[in-house]
Image (cartoon, rainbow, N blue to C red; front, top):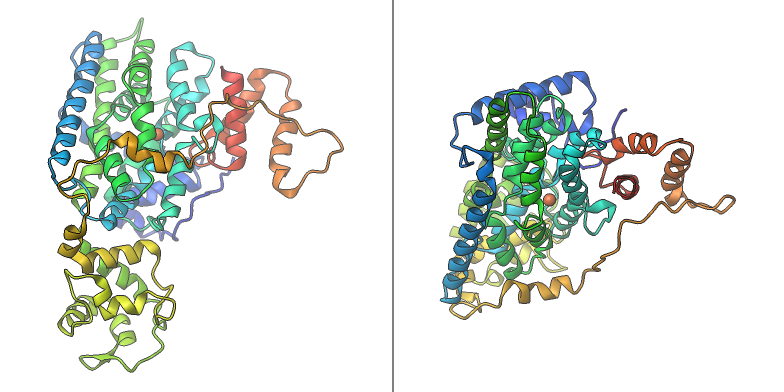
Length: 482
Ligand SMILES: [Fe+2]
């Protein structure tokens, strides 16, 4: 079945396959996951990455019987590290990850290719929905999809988060930022060939990391809704969450007849795949505000005509002339600072360049997105921004307290997934409901539960589950599965 890509992307020229192989494969897997050539490329990619991963260290216990203790020790270690972090902050330490809101937005954008396919690695197991060995892992997948409830579907949530912060221009990120996303999409397509690796990857991905706790805390502090991240703190918990289910899934699939040593070796290698490509910490560490400002200005260079008045000249050139040549932008920024149009490390309101791009009467009003404005603002503000932090040196409220303003805005639903509500015959159906009606009609024509589940499966794929039809299909599938 030909799938329709539902994520906005830039055109990816064929030459990108050489320059940015992971990015090219990522979009190919979103565009045409059923295409034989794309599938072959995905399998080759996985084999190459597994080869690369095999050289990395692995902290899993040599005997899977020790996984329970390993999980407990990991959870205790992370808990202790997080407590130490909170103590530091209470004693007045600055944020550990995000120097500014622009820095946090850089992180949200940088990990977007991974987060937008959240859960994908487990999709291939759905074909085995009637095999009890995979029940806990399929439950994990359905929970990643919020069991079809949009307010709990992880991909829907991340898409909304990106859109709300103006960070949805992630398609041109570096190749490294796409590695994890490709691994996840490739595992989705090749579970039959890489089942132990899927289980191992899941075991690594679903462990609660320290960075999830710290980033949740600091996003809240910067006024960014942390729900996508705090949700994972609860779903990955070691007691009954995805971390525990990951171990159950591994033990349930343990070979009874085959070579268990080889199985566990492959699980370990799948586990190591988590360490390839850009990570949360490398994305955060790679933030260079000046470079980001240049990237934004270079992007705008193509717009060309947005500054109508040419009366301002810097070193004999109009703003349009400066921006017409991307390679001149570093020099342009330097000139703006020298001519005091940009006054670094001061309130940006003191900078004429800032005045030029904000305010309704500004010549460049509307040219820069909210994210881009934040970036320029925080870069100009520099050290001044740190001095403005009102809570420096004061005890911080707990994460739970900080979550209130966001969580109180959110509709919390504890309802079970809705059963399909078939539209009554003869009732008028709007264009918006046609998809749902069609799907329900198709299902009623199928004779068995098994046939209905098979029919629904393609709609639960990583590229489709977050669409209206995909969410409906997930709700129905969850109802049939449980
Ligand atoms: Fe998730």
